[in-house]
Length: 200
Image (cartoon, rainbow, N blue to C red):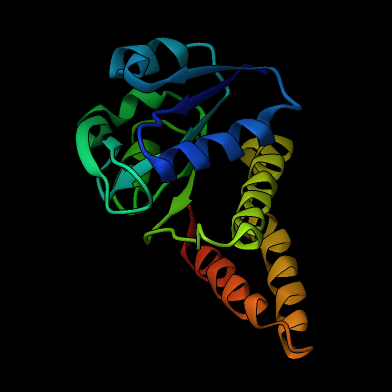
């Protein structure tokens, strides 16, 4: 199975998500396209033989974007990587986009243009970078999403994708009931991911 990873990087959030995504894919054979090397033409050429595309970066309602910035502040948009007019560049792949918002517009457009599945998020994603536990929990959630997507392929369902997230949420809620204050915010972060997770 041919797997393509797209990691724009360029700022703290995009770098962290890329690191988590590539770590999750380490069990697979894949080709990673990074930074300025990611263009519509590159995506179109890569998806000619690819079965799956994993995007780890920033998104908007209608596109994947490359940003620049320092720290965890709001990054500056540098360019659009892939938008609705070029959604057919994703071919007939199964797509997982760990990115804000792109399941709202880009996801439906990709499926309408031939993609078998588009897994993504309807809302903005966030975590608490000052907390290594929060980052680790989100990294584990990304790992779960990658693992389930690879194993299930085009047969993946939202229930498959949400099951490990739901189990992690229950774990942290249980810790919070036992007096672990930080677990409250981690459970909340994971719950927002689960509620926003979308399958087209």
